[in-house]
Length: 134
Image 1 (cartoon, one colour):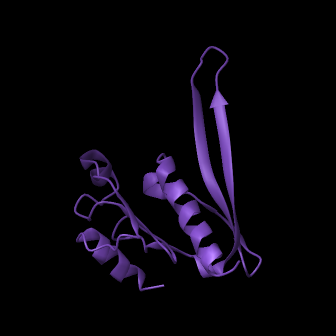
Image 2 (image 1 turned 45 degrees about the vertical axis):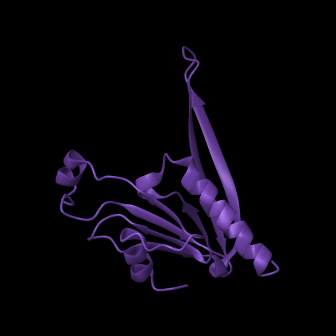
């Protein structure tokens, strides 16, 4: 996988290859002020054929997932509703099973409510495994 900072810079400047998925959103002024990140670039999630890189703010290192490090991925979903409502809130995340036996929960911090980001991760991971014969 290319250097995570290089991936983020390419995506930030519109130079992402066609096979990358780029998710961005504007940093809210109030949120940026409260978290001390109002002058940081906007949050960015880039999913490439080799993995995923998420930038949150300048104080936090990018979160990097390399598909080669994974033995498997499981989609997890939880729904919640109240007895007096017909509305259901859905939370989705991925359980990442690492080749070294470790397990981690993955849900992009800045894009947690965007199911498209989780879907893009699953699609890229599936293609990665198919191309590698896994």
